[in-house]
Image (cartoon, rainbow, N blue to C red):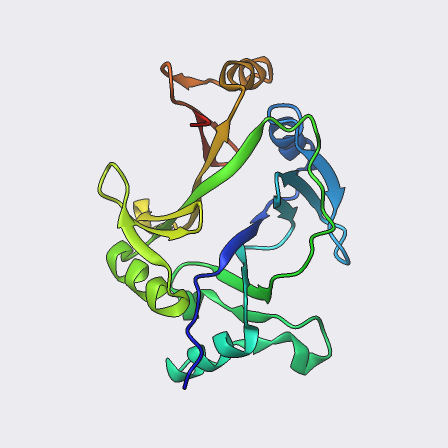
Length: 228
């Protein structure tokens, strides 16, 4: 009898960009995220709680997911007609890679859960709780990801099709002018006012109200809300 698949959890995000200073002004100076270097690539990685955002000089975004059973996930993908690139077959760390053609949105790396070596900075005052991907067919892509990863489908307050990966929310929005990719990152914080001040002090134009704020940086909307 096939193993019942559980929805994977979100672990990290790789973004295209080679401006270390610009990334640092956001992740370190606004959020207080600890800056490390990813192994073995050496790209800058910023730690948020048990999640991370990595900047790299490569096109496109990659979502890093963790699952309970990589073999079961591989079998499931094969039943859907998808042959993911298998890192273990190349002598690398076991990992299934689905490219944007497979997912309809972006590259996805899927690994098994393992004890994390990354530790966030005690000065980090925010938790990465969601992201938005601009795609050409949001409804269809959301359904496809539901089939790929058994993630719960839902809609946000604006009716945008979304998936729940544990406490993490992944939204699929229409691509403006056909430009796809990561368009927004959501953060929850226990120090909302301090974070807004940090962003303003770095020269970002912060728009918002008592319980929501946002600013643009690195071509992405950073959306802030108080931790419930």
